[in-house]
Image 1 (cartoon, helix red, strand yellow):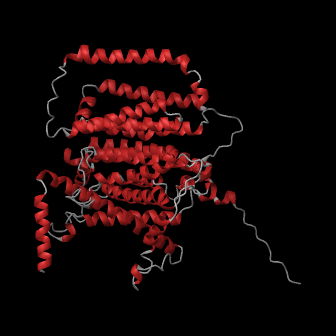
Image 2: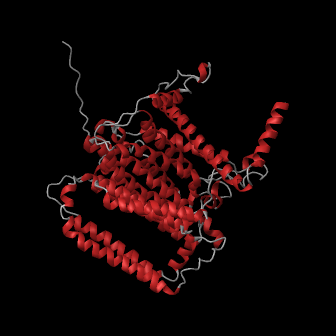
Image 3: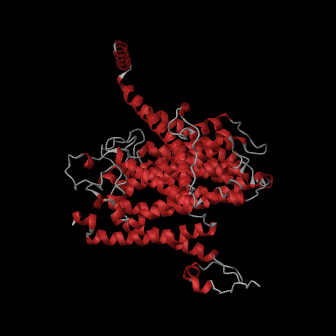
Length: 366
Length: 200
C-alpha cells in the first residue's frame, strides 16, 4: 500500500508542478484520446458482433475459435483483434500507375473525418467533448466531408472498378444527405436549438416527450438515409462485389485497407446509431422519467440509456444486412430523391401545422 | 495571441492552396486544392466567431458543390497540354482582370473603409453571442422579403435546369414503379394442374 500511496503522491506533485494554464488542455487531450480509443475498440467489437449476429440469423456460428490469450472462455471474441494484427502486418501495395500522394492521403482523410464528428456527441448529461452552439451543423459538415476519402481513394487507384465505386458513392451520399438534412430540420423545429445537448434536454419528461412520437416518419427516414450514407447493405452498391469486385477499396491492402474501409465505415455506423438515439429517442434521458419516482435508479439520466439505445440501432443495422437483398442502383436514387425528400418536406409541413395549432410538445408554448 | 498565430497558419495554407488551384497540372488535384481553400476560409470564419457561416460554407461548397465538381472532372479525360496552349494569348486579359480586382480591393480597404477606422480592433462579443441566432433573427424579420425572393429565384433556377435537360426519348425503356407495386399475383402466376404420369 505504501508503494501505491507514494506513487499517488508523486503523481499529484507532478500534476501540481505543471503550470495552471496547461491543466485544461491536458485534461481535454486526455478526454479526446479516451473517446478515440473507445470508438476504435467499439469498432473492433462491432465487427465481431456483426459476424456473430449474421451467423446466428443464418443458422451458423460465426467466428468461434480465437480466444483472449488462449483462455477457455468467450471463444471467438479475440477474432477482430487477430484480424487487425494481421492487417497491420501485411504489406501495403501501391499500384504502379496510381497517384501515390492521393492514394495514401485518402485513408487519412477517411479516418480523420470519421473521428472528428465524435467531438460534439453528447455522451451523458455532463460529458461532451465540445459543447458548441452549432453542433448539428458541425455534424452535417463533417459527415459530408467523409465522401472525399471514398472519392479520392477511387480516383487515385487508377482502376476502373475503384472509379465506378467512387462515382456511385458520390452520387449516393449527395442524394441521401439532403433527406438527412431535411429530417433534422424537423428535429430543430422541435428543439429550437442547434446544440445537441439542448436537443436532448428538449425531449426530457419520459417516453412520451421524445421526438420518436411526433417525428416518427422523420426518424425512419433519418435512419435509412444513415444506412445509405454509411454505404451499408442494402445500399452497398459502392462495394458491389458482384459487379465491381470491391468498389473504391479494391486496390487497398493491409493497414490502408483497414483505415480506408473498415474503421471509418464501422465508426460511422456507431455514430449514426448514436445520433438517431440522440435526435429521436432522447439520447441519455431515461424512458421512465416522470413515470416512476425521480429518486429511483430507473429514472436517472445516464450514459447507460444512450448505450442501450445505440446498441438497439446497431442491431437493426446488422438485422437489415442479414435480411434484405441489395438494391439496384437506379432504385437507390429513386428512393432518395423521389420518395424520401418529398416525404420529409410533407412531414415538415405537418409539423408546422402542429406548431401553429400548439399540439403535442408545442402545447407548452400556447 | 493564439488566435493571431492560428490566423496566420490557416491564412498561409489558404493562399498556398489558392495558388495550387492555378498551378497544378492535374485538374483533379486543382479541384482538390480548391476544396482545401474553401475549408481554410471556413476556418478563418470560425476564428471570427462566425460559426454558422463557416460551417455552412463547408456543408454547401465542400460537401456538395465540390463533390459534384469532382464527379464531373473525374469523368472527363482532360488533355492538359491542349488547355495550356492558349495561355500566352489569354495572359494579358487575365492580368487585366486580376489587376482590376486588386485595385477594387485596395480602393475599398484603404480609401473608403466604409466609415470604419482601420486601426481599432472590433469590440469584444458578449458572452452569450450566437451567430446562428442573430443571423436567423435578422433574416426572418428585417430582410424577410429579399430572403424569400432569393429562395424563389433559386427554386425557379432548379426547375428551369431540370426542364431544360429533361428529354423524352422515343422507345426509351423506363421503370414504372407504381405499376410494379400494383401488380398482383393473379396477373403474374398461372397455376396449372398437371396429372401425374401414369405408371404403366
